[in-house]
Length: 416
Ligand code: AMP
Image (tube, rainbow, N blue to C red; front, side, top):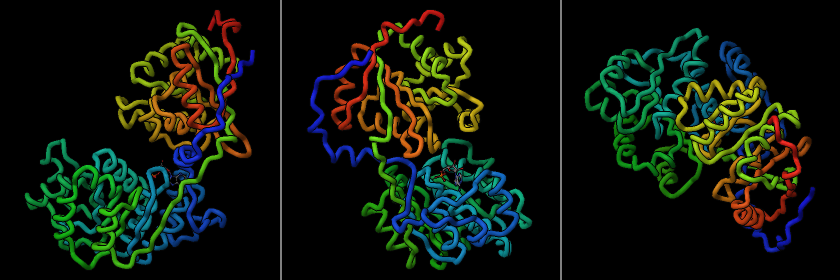
């Protein structure tokens, strides 16, 4: 049964929609996406191209199209781009390439330094260097160091390291122990510079800049270009190539949105009914708490539906494995919290289900936006309990679009 809501959506705020309708699908200002560029044309050598193909990177992302040639030429680069844009490979690939003709520096003298705000990012980038460095004829030892763990093993591992990925505090600690030197560093990468500053690393960054030689290549990535980041840009970068990745605006009209009114005790069965009766092969289910995610996964599995939870309490390894299975279609259902879902890099999903609504309308649009694609729009379904009705009305008003609502009391849910 179709139920229509009775409020006016005419006053929906356009400004709000413009702010929130941004997704990870990116596009450069100069419309680089319109020309198809291959990795082969970017100046990378055969062994790297082989690994790129093995990683199923078929085409360079816009930031890679711009950053790889610029970095290979030795230019400084200022990149305004978020996680998900492909920025990591954008600097990892040309840096590894540049090492192929580079002599080894003295032991414990770091040639390329990548400064990052968090331990997670350090490990992630370290792993990308390992992956792409594996097949190169000229081996390059890379290490990721960060605080919160014992420093001694890191000091020992620094032996012969040429590329170091580090958080600022731990880097300075290691320097104070004379475990490494930056006096011969040729390349500096500042990744997520805005986050580094927000986390209070401004002083440490200044100390590190002071220790680095002036004659070096500097690459700065930041999601935003605020005053502080711009200051670093002006003081540390020399005539940088500026690359800006704009987030493509999503047309909300492309997304098929539906909702079911449902009593709380019928929510689980309704979810399973929808997944089974609609034969959903790839569905991202959103919940608001880690525990709900785990419980839901357990129930789905008991009912023969292949599901995994994605939340902050899962290890990085478990998350990556689940994501890869989900992306390749081997896992039908991923149950995620909003926080975990931000790291999920999937360009398009046929189904998103809001098992629980997010608190903020912005998160709602972020969730459903994953299904919006011109040629083949997916569907976003929200399960609405009586206590959610008011909140869902607010979300619809802010979004400026009414969601088609259905009753579910007449759906036979026995057996689900
Ligand atoms: P990043 O923004 O660097 O964190 O990258 C986001 C995700 O995009 C990572 O999971 C990468 O493995 C993936 N990725 C980066 N470049 C490409 C590419 N050219 N083709 C396919 N996937 C890519």
